[in-house]
Length: 351
Image (cartoon, rainbow, N blue to C red):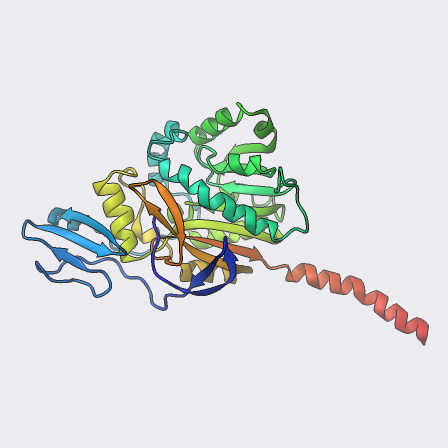
C-alpha cells in the first residue's frame, strides 16, 4: 500500500496522468548494515543517530526504527507452487481478520480509502472500450470478476456502477461477511454473487466470460504469479481488461510496507506481507505480455498514513496500478476469414 520511482511513459493515461514504466535494473533485497553516520546505499539514504536509531529519508518521508529491527530483513526468492496460488500461512492471518472488513477505521482502512482511486481507475478505463453508457449505471451489463474479494470492499462499488460482479475468495469467513453485507442492499444482492474458491477452480467453467478481471492487493500474496496471470487471461473475453494494484519490489517498499506499516505503526498486522512476493512493474509486465495481455497503463499510488488518503503519482517504487487488455488478435483473424468469402465471391461473379 505505498508509491515511488519514475518509469518510462506507458501507452495510455489514467485519470489524466501518464503511466510510466521501466526502471531498468532488478531490485535487490534491502540492506541496512552501514556504520553510524554513514549511508549504506546510494539510492536509499539510511542514517544512524547517536542513540542507535536508524532513519530513512526519501520522498519527504521519514521512517525510524531501532538497530534490533535490522534482523527482521527477509532474504530469498519468489516461491513458486505448481499446485495452488494460495499461501496457507497468509490465509491464517486474513482468517483472523475476517470480521474487520467493514470497519472503516480498522486494519482495512487503507483499502476503504483506496476505493477513491481504484474505482474510478477501473470505471474510466472500461468506458474507453464502449461506445455509450448510462450515466446512472455506466458499467451496466459488464461482467467483472473480483479475485480475492475479501469482504466485498471493491465488489460493492463496482456493483453500484451497474456491473454484474462475481467475487471469489479462498476463505469462507470472508465470503460470509461479504454475503451478509451485500444482503442489506436489494440492488447489490441481485448484481453481486460471491463464491468461496480460488481462481484455478473456476477457469474452465468461466473461460472467456468476463469483460474485466480485478486483482487489487492480491498478487503480492500469491505463491505462483505466472499461473495466476495465466488464469486471469483465460477467464477474460478477447479485448477484456485486467486491473491490478500491488506493491513494487524495492528497498523503499520494504522499509515502508513492512518495517513501518507492520513493525512500527501497526497500520497492517505483522506478517501480512512478504517482501520476496512483491513484484516490480517490469516483472509484472513481462508476465502480462507473455500471456497475450497488452499493458495500457502503469501508474504509481501513494498512501499518506497520517491523512489516510491516497493519490496518484508518477513514482511507482511503492504502490502502483496496472491496466492491461487481452489481445483480440484471435477475434480479428476470425473476422478476416468471415469477410474473405464475400471478396472471393465478388471476384468470381465478375469473372
